[in-house]
Image 1 (tube, chains in turn cyan, brown, purple):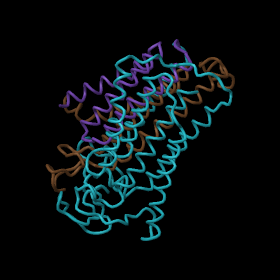
Image 2 (tube, rainbow over the protein chains, first blue to last red):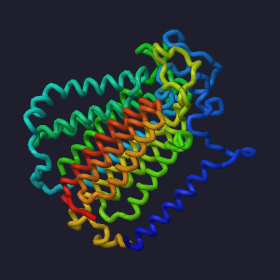
Image 3 (cartoon, chains in turn purple, cyan, red):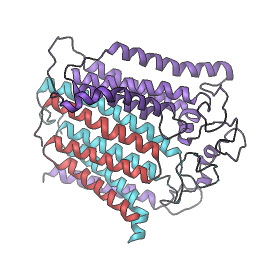
Image 4 (spheres, rainbow over the protein chains, first blue to last red):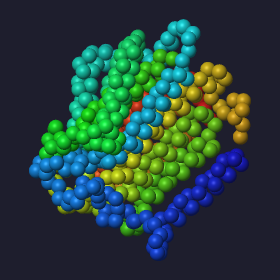
Length: 253
Length: 121
Length: 80
């Protein structure tokens, strides 16, 4: 083995020992200790406030299909963290994804009119006939996942990935499939503007950016949880359009 | 033996995956193998974060018609929200890196970083 | 139960090492997809259904697809 490989191996093993020291700290006064595996105490963590839905008020008991007008209103606790309590971080993450998709389109731009060298082989007969039935069903499944994001596991990112998979199958079935990219751009732009527009409207009525200005109904029904379903619909359409445009740019150039 | 595996299997396994990915990024010479090592590091960090919030005999953090109120023990939902964001950002960075790789191959004709001018070890 | 988790973690580590050792690039891309599949199963056992769905859809599906598309465009099938 070369000298560089052995040196890298020694460096990585030393780094591993340093990382494992963080799990062996004996508890002293005021020092942060990592709990053992499987014994995380929720009572000492911030998650206690999010589970009881009582950051601003003092609510202690949440019952499915009975409690009305709670602080957050969605039955899925991870959704209420992403789209209600921490929605500013989700806005930052949507920005990063937008930046990556636009940067990829800018890097792969070429104004030489070269013919498209076929990088995929011609699809088989099963794929060609199957995709005609499966394509609207896949988009329907993706839309179901992000519309019901506050009731079942799911949400905007998962639904967007399923929609992008549907378009990838269509590219694989037919070698000469041309995607109308300006329609995708229009969908993405409208979804992005509506997300920020909801936030600005919350600033106008309630005094804080992205506040929940609709009323939260009974927990567990479809029309509940304020603006969380609206945020997830716009995120799902935006992520689906962006991942599709990433795949289309990579295939066509 | 069983108690050692119970305590250290998740933490140790994810830290080992991070170190394997780091070794791949430092040592390999093909550009696509460097990006595969980066993707392994991303997966290792995500497994480590989710396993920090596990409660023994806890339930998944969703209220359904079977688990009706929040008086039971729930798994910590905050690391799961962090990891959801991290997975999507990981794939965005990978896509941009692969686009730059395509352009490098068009200009230099090879993917070996010791032959590309300007990237010497 | 603990033995099941340990076996899954061991398979994940072995395929992670295999992804860096293989010579042909197509084989190492498939090994990286296998690591993502094992991570998605581990997320299910850690009682996190949202994260498991996201890792399966994005990590195992789209990452492998864009790696293979880039590989066909650069055609560096043998490597170091």
